[in-house]
Image (cartoon, rainbow, N blue to C red; front, side):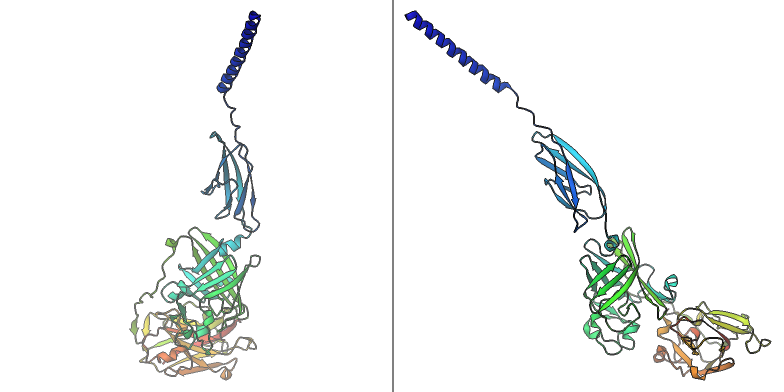
Length: 502
C-alpha cells in the first residue's frame, strides 16, 4: 500500500516535473523567437489642382505601411504633412517626390511630374498672381503720338530726360481681384489738353485738389491717385477702367479723343506684353480715328528693383547757340544753290518739298517749289539754323503761295497759310513757345500767286507771344511754313516761292 502511494507520488511528481519542464521550455522558446519584421512602406499619392486657384494643388496621400512622410514639391519647398496643400509661385513643370517611412526607418519614394498651366496667361502678365505695379519705361521713349501704329511717335515722343520727371514716378497697379490703383506719388504734370493757360501748365506741381483746376475752371481732382476697377478681355486685348477719373497713359485720354475732364469709364488696348528677364514691358495704345491720331505708352514692371533705371529729375543743361545777325535770309525754292538759298535751308519734316519745279501759272518762268502735304496730321516745312538769329536787319517776313483748285477744300483740308518762328534747340517742343503769322483763309484766291507779308513785331497767334517778338527775343533758330491746316491727314499739293526776311 505504501509502495503504491509512493509510486503514485513519484508518478505525479514526474508528471509535474515534465509539465514544469514543458512550461519552462515553452517559456524559453517564446523569449528566444524574434518579433516579425514590419512590412515595407509603399509611397503613393494623387493630386488635384484647385478650380479656383490654378497654382494651388492638393496632394492626397495613399501610402501604405508608413508612419511619417516627406514631400518635395519640386520648387524648393517641402512638407511633412500627410496630405498637404501647396501653392506654387508660377506656372511650370515640377517633379513632386513623396518619401514614406515606417517605424523601422525603412523608406520608399514615389515621384510624379505635374504641370501647372496658367489658364489666363495674359491676365497674369498684366496683374500677376496677386498684383503687379507698372511705371513708365525709363529707357528710350516712353510715350508719343503718330498717325498710326506703323508710325507711332513720329510726331512727338517723351524720354526720361528730366523734362517731365513726375510722370516717371507714377505707379499703376493691377490687382488680380479687379482693383486698379493709381498712385501719383505726390506730383502731377500740367498737360496741355487739361491745364493750358493755367499756372500749373507745363510743370510738375504738387498733386493736391487745390491745384487740380483745368483750363475751363473745372475741378479735375478725380485724376489724382485713387482706387478703381478694371476688366481685361484677353481676346481683344482691351482693358476697361471703371471709376470716376481712372486713367492710364495720360489723364485726358479716352477711346475717342482727349477730354479735359474725368470720365466714369475708360478703355485702352494692350498692344504687347513681354517678359524681358528682370523686367516686363507693356505697350498700351489709344487710336483716335476721327482725329487721325495714334498714341501709345510703354510701361515696365521690374522683378528686381536693382534693375530699375533712375528717374532723371533735372534736364541736361543745353549749351546755347552762338548768335548770328544776317543781312540776308531767304529761299526762292528755284534751286538749292547759294544764289537761291541764304540761311533758310529746309530740314527734315513731314512735308515733301521738291525745288525747281515748273511754275503752275507760267511753266516757262522761274522755277518754284512744290509743297506736298502728305497724309499726316501735323505738317510744316521746317528750317532750323545752328545759330540764334538776331533780327536787327529785318522788319518783315513774306512768302508767295499758290493754292491750286485741284485740291479738295470741302472737308478737312483748308486754305490756311502760316509762318512759324520758334526755338527748337533748347526744347524739342517748340510748339509750346512759338510765334505764328497767319493768313485769313477767306482772303486766299485759288489758282493764282499771292504774296503774304507780315510785320515781325505783330505775330497773330502762338503761345510765344507772351515771350516777346523776334526783336525782343534772342533765342530763335527755327522757322516753318504751314499750309492746309492741322489735325487731319488729307493730302494737298501747293506751290511756294520767295520766303524772304527783309
